Length: 466
Image (cartoon, rainbow, N blue to C red; front, side, top):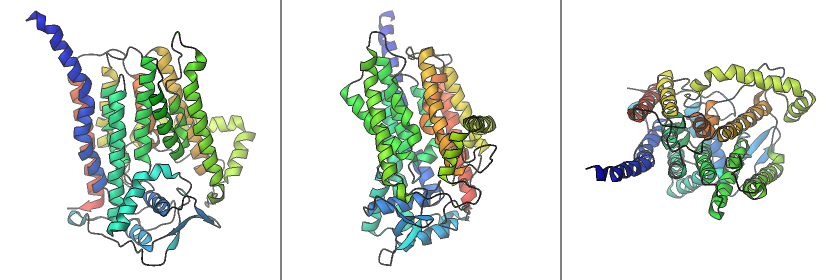
């Protein structure tokens, strides 16, 4: 009997190694699809603006048109009609309304696209400068919607479903690649904020899934101390796509850069991330310059122009630094709850989901991973520095777009902005070893599923009557 014990341990270890990605593939399609289909059209963050931009790109109009203080393009009238029916307005930054309907009428609204009618000008200045790279699944959905004469609502739902398929593929790839922290990454991937983001029409599916993959591949390269041509190509392609969608996540391409492996020349090791980062930054700059004419200053009376914000920050570096520090002192204590806001901020703060969801995350961080031998103190510090760099870039972006004159803190920072770097930060803080009992993993998965039930239940009761 004793002779078989080493073989049995190997079999258990192998089974344990593959289980996280198989569990994800078993659960995620149904979970993500539930958010995609139960959330009404246009009730995900800025969804009408993302639909407008994807529709514009589908017509091969890659650059937006500026008309005075508005920036957008000519689109079919059905998009406006569907948006007004659902959230009450097509005005950018307008507060969306909640329309409750009987559960039996969940799919009852079907607005014709109106492609045979004269196009009208739409103002979607918040998304008009986004790169086409971030809208590939959505553009495909729009083309199918046009060809099959689908309603606006079902075209949008199709875009959500294709989006979540992209996210599932990226996360699945990440779970296969990451050398340690698989169970922790799985819990994050199945969390309500991740599922809701993947199931929306915007760019979150690409950005969040791409963040997972860049984290996994960066840690794999660091653990094996080896860059290859294929790994460099994948980091480059995914890094370009993610950073073109949202420039704040550019630091993720440098996860493997530091600390330097022993016995490897600095120039040789740092060359791939430096080339990728430089090329991505150049692409971002080129795209911004190409779209400079379509950028409009905020029309809100309390908002300075972009030029005024930059000038103030450069002229008052100490005050700018204090503004950022105050912002995080104010936002950090409630950041965990802000992750659990759904709809277009129309389902705020589901604490019944936030408490078990965060408990599952903390349980897996405390549980640790016996395979995390490469998670040294230097590696943790570098990972946390990248997390901090992304957080700083997000804060600066919000300062540029939503900080009022004389503001005490910077408004507009949402928990979902940190989902692409959440695995990186959580793995950096997890235990290096593995603690007993193994049932902690099962409990964590149960808790995250409970969180999803609570979130989906609140979404249902917010938008539907029974």
